[in-house]
Length: 438
Ligand code: LLP
Image (tube, rainbow, N blue to C red):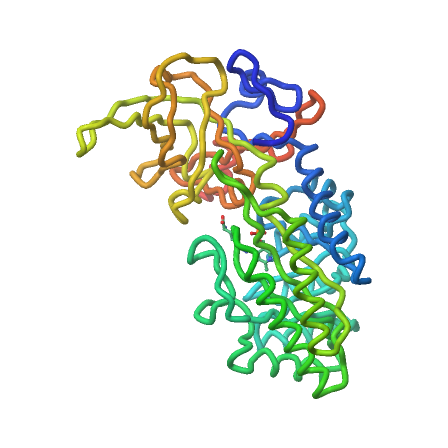
């Protein structure tokens, strides 16, 4: 749950407003954002990562991975907390620019960036473009030459480290689409090519090993691999690359029984690992950066739903399961269906003394995989009109939302100090129909 949550007589209060008031004003389903919690997380990541490396004389930048969720308000809030913005497509880049984030504080990622995306990034003077393939080197170079600028680039390296929750969100093993392979020599080839290209300014190396990582060992492994690659490159060319990015992927708690990564402990361990490796290699450490997305925004939001149909289903084992249908579903949270993700849910509009029974929260879409929470104990007297809240939905919820069944997408309501404001408006049927050209 977000930090500023309390419960009175069974009614959940978020940052000074009850969910019953919020539902009455903004409707459901809605994403509710605890602004102070979001900003606090951004500040904690900044302080923990910078603090661990400061004694080594190593500066750290934290980029917010905006794919997790972005709006201009969120870009401004995290930027005000000292984070930069990592973007991975035109819309994210355009949103960061619209928010007034200076180009120097924006990075651009992507395994298939368009010429338009690269052009917009360079025109806006982004701090770095993370190159993901050999052909892209020449594409960025030619656009930079046309614009009369030198493009700052990093190389995304596939280190072979396998980490992360689900197959679809692990990103540094060989057989996947991201990055340039360390093992095959493609990464070294990319470095040589960029080094020889006057149109490009080679900043350093990048690695993102996966997402929802709870075991921090992979970060150390990837960092060591990058430092060795950097030392090899220095041996060949005499150039010691000034920067190294270790990506995002810091795991969060989705269930009451889980714990997210302790970023301060992770940063301290990493500082030790890097110090030892740098000593072996005889090279000073580079400036570091990280790209957390989920860990900044995930726990700061909840999704508020209204309960509709409730039914008891008899299972093969003779037991029953309460199927609780809500007014959203896989269109606002695809993660359960796509990654077998686990979530929690609570009745938040009244107290109940009814026994808690095995339940499943499902959506209103036309398929049986439309599940929001696979397994949860909920009061047996749940009924139409009750409000259910699902915590930890801030990351990859609204940002991966769809209009399946032509449902209008849910809005995002930001709450702080008893004040609420829609930072992303709920779509209307008119919005959905507006794209239909007849
Ligand atoms: N940096 C790069 C280069 C990335 O590819 C990603 C995530 C991040 C940073 C941020 O990772 P985070 O800190 O949020 O874990 N839709 C999936 C997650 C996909 C992540 C893709 N890349 C999900 O809902 O779990």
